[in-house]
Structures are given as C-alpha cells and as structure tokens.
Amino acid sequence: MLRGSEAILVSTIGRGFGFNQEPMVLVDNAAVLYAQLKLIDRRFFFCLRYEDVSTLTKKEKDDLRMFLHPKLELDNMLKQFEVSTNTKKLEEGELGSSASYHIHQLEARMFLIRKLCRSKN
Image (cartoon, rainbow, N blue to C red; front, side, top):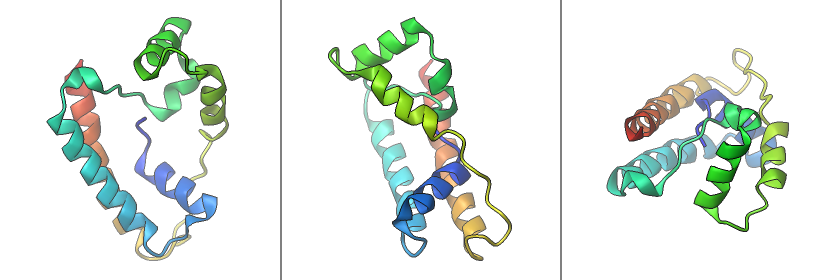
C-alpha cells in the first residue's frame, strides 16, 4: 500500500513508536522495499494507494483478495484501513527540526516505489 511520506511518519509516531530512531528506520525500510521490488517479477506484487482503499469496487476487492489469499476476510481488513486514512498534517516544528529531513528522505524513496508501481501497468 502506497501512502504519503508525511502520513507514514505521523501514523508511526502517533502509534507510540517515538521519534528517536523510527524515522530513519522508515527511510531504510523504504529503500529495502524498493530494492526488493526491483528484483522480483512485477506479477508478484500489487500496488494500491492507501487513500483508495475505501473506493475499491467489488471486482477490485475480489482481485486483491485473490492476489493475497482466496480465504482472506478482506472486508474486515479494509475497514481497519479506512478508519486510519484521515491522518492529520504535521504542524511546523511539531516533531522537531529533523522531521522535514526525514520526510524528504522518505519521500525520495517512496517516489521510486511509486514509479516502479506505475511501470507495472
């Protein structure tokens, strides 16, 4: 699931993971994910914008469910995502002076992942 960098950071911090090491872990994880996706066949991963979860058609939900696992209770899982899509925006300085640096670094990596997802189609 693709999500904006600021939303990822705010969600992570908001769930109590703290702001000490977690932002750099997110940046590193995004870089690793991109490297892994580059190595596997495009047929074996599915890209979906986090914000679009609530707008999936029945066919798209069925396609996603079959891609993940035929017996997956997808509707219950998707309801959890819908609840958390209204992420607040960061206020200037709210997460400290390094927040904009981490958002920028994360966004650079997420840009590559989104580009890879677009090239899949």
